[in-house]
Structures are given as structure tokens and as C-alpha cells.
Image (cartoon, rainbow over all chains, first blue to last red; front, side):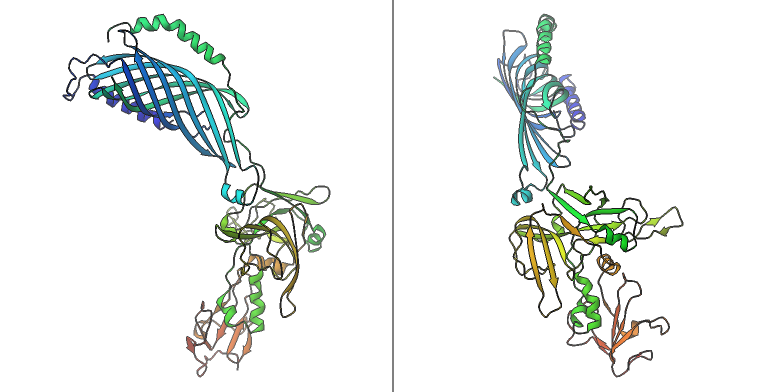
Length: 207
Length: 332
């Protein structure tokens, strides 16, 4: 996470500059744009804090679908995300797959070709673990048992995300965002509340 | 933005707080995942009974270290092939049959139980380089060794260590005092690790007269008799539940394990002969052999007609000074 956050912040600043009207490119259809349409579909690369592997940063993809409700700049939707992290300890190589499903409430504000947004998401996260002993193939070839284990944990997940989106062409825009997350998971035999950060970098299409 | 955002948050603040409270109250379910502290069960356990009386009888009564040494493949010096029919040289070349220390293994303090049995726990397999073979088939041989921790620092230093606090003097080396498998010439109990296929033609610490070892870890007890023309031995493979016997070894065998077995072939003009200090012997009128004063140094073979060091055969000599032997030449 330590590397992802500065990158995300820099990208956020870089993307926010055109939104303030400095050196804006002349994009067709930009003038008079009042925000996206009723539906929104977005996909992004997703970095988030690891639940159990403290030194492993999960990287994956997230897909969002929103629908604008009424004339307010408020959208409700669904977020599905998947991210993977791998780390090796003294005896095992651990792979954790993080799957998130969450309901999203989002508000946004249009500024020329740019759009600022903030969204709150609440749902559940599942962490699927595959643990393999180091020298797995050799140990398996020798018939030694207990060289691969699987485990899982499901718990509530919530996150806040703020970001900026810049219209590129038609209903297509590029976006970058980030914010804090929280989940409760069973780790190492104990229930643990884990705070973290997430960052997204992706595209969305309004129609 | 067309207003309403602040109002939306104000109105929905109650719902948000409720959602967060609910979320915090919810619990995780499932067996739970692990972090990097996850412990792994041992790959193997080895139990050994050490000949403490033999070690004491040999004169060492200090602190001991114990561990598992995986034997490294050894190159036979080419000179041992060239001069295989010369008994004095062949006697030195027999050191190539010792289990060499190579990279010194990590040893642990010797802490036996009430029965004098010590347990070694293997958490991982040895590195692939510790044996011979490839991904399809590999074999490695381990020896349980006990070393005298001469300077009681808990570290096995078979060649000593630089003592930087005392004028950069080298400390006295730690010596192996007992080993379950020290050389092919002595009765031995090996830890055998076979992975995959077995090559019956393998000459890596060969198992004369034995059946192929089983796949996995096993204990091989064998008594090797090289006194006859053909090597003969009795082999018995068992699993690792059997207790290994670790007999005391002599200082000579310990040196064979510690030192290189190299033998140098030297041109007469490049050999420095000191008649007062030399302990060399004439093996023939054309062949001079200078044993090394230090057991860890290579002896020298000085032939009047010979080949450069490293050649495994010498049908056509690289030099021939038989007609003009140097003045110092002692063999006549």
C-alpha cells in the first residue's frame, strides 16, 4: 500500500488539474456537458490493503454499475471487486484472493469535462487462502502430507472513496480515486478489525 | 454541481452512522485465514544416539554441537587416476571417499534426552545441490555429525575463525568428533533422501551391493568391506523411526572430512626441494612424492616425465627430463 498511495495521489492531482480549467483540451461535446447519463458502468484496477498479509498488497480489478436516481447527482449501484496478494513466510507461500461485493451510494459534481465524486460502499469481503509449503513439488513427490491447505473467511466490508473523473470521448471517462476501508475478518484464529486504504484507476462509460 | 449534496449527506447521515455501527457489530465467519506466522510441520525427525564415551575417551570433554551434514559430490583428483597403481599415492587418494564438510552445516547445541538420544527436526528438504540428479531423479546422503565446540561460541567453525579482538589471530578450529557416516571405508548409517527415479549407475557415494533406496527419507545401515577385490557390504534400509548410531571418529578421519583431497603434479623445475625439511619419498627413480606437513594441504607428485596437473591420463607426457634430471633430484 505504501507505494500505491503516493501514486494514486499524484494521479489524482494530475487528473484534477484539467478539471479546474487549466490547459483544457478542446474536446468535442465538452461545452455544456452537465454530467453523465442515468446509467454508469466502470472498470478499474484496484489496489487495496491486505487483510492478513501485512506486507503483501493485493492488486486486482473492480467493476461498478450505477444508476442515477432522480435529478440529483446521486447514484446507487453495486461494486464487485477481486484482488490477489501473495507472500512467503518461513514455511509457507500464502496466496490470498480478496473478493468484495458491496452496495454503493455515490454523489458527484460536474466541472466542465471533469467530475468529482465521493462514494460510500458497504458489503462483504471474502478472503480465500491457499497455503503451500516451500518446495511444494518436491514434498508432494515424496508423498509428504499436509503440504497444501485451503481456508477462507467472510466478513463485513465498508469503504469510502473520493476521486476525480475526466471525460475523454462521448460518454467515456477516465477516473482515479482512493479512500479508507474497513473489514472484519477471522485471521490467525481471531476476529480482527482491519483498516486499510484502496486506490482505483480506471474508465467508466455513461449512457 | 446542482446543490443538494450537502443536504443529502445531512439527511443520510443518520443512515450512514447506523450502517457503520451495524458493520462494526457484524462478525466474520469461516475457519479463518492465516498470516505469515503460520507454522509448518516438520518434514522429518531424526533421532540419534551419540557415542559420548568414545568422544570422552578421545580426550574431548567440552561443549558439543550436533546437526545433519548433507554430503557434497567430490571430484576425484586427476592425478589419482594417473597414479592409481602407486600405493603411496592411492593411500592419499582414499580421502576422496570421505564425506566432505564443504559448506559447514548449521549445528545446534547438543542436548540429549535422559536416554542419551538427541532429536534433529528437519523443517525443509535439503537444497537440490546437496544431492546428485535432476528433477526426475535425485539422491542425497546425510550424516549426523557431532562437533567439538572448542571456543564454546555455539558456532561450528571447522577452519577456525578470525579473532579480530586479539591481533587478528585465528581461533582453534572446531573438529568433528563423531559421525554416523564419515567415509566409505567405515561402517556407516546414512540418512538417505531419494526423489523420483533411481540411477543404478550412480557413483555418488555408491551403495555397493545394496538394493535401490526407497523413495523419500530412509535410514541405511551398511558395513562396507573393501579388503577384498570387490567391495561387499550388508545393507539394511529402515524408516527414520529407527535410532541412528553416531560413533566417535579418529582425528585422521575428521581431517579427511575437513580437508580437500587434492593432489598436485609438479614439474621438477617448479618444485622447491629442501633436503633438511623434506619428508618426501622416492617411489621410483623417476617419481618423487612429497607428502604435505599439514593434513589440509595437498601433497605433491614430482615426476621426471609427466603431465600438467588436471589431466586424467598421461600417455604422452607434457615434459620428459629423464635424460637431464635436475641437480636436486634425490631419486636415483
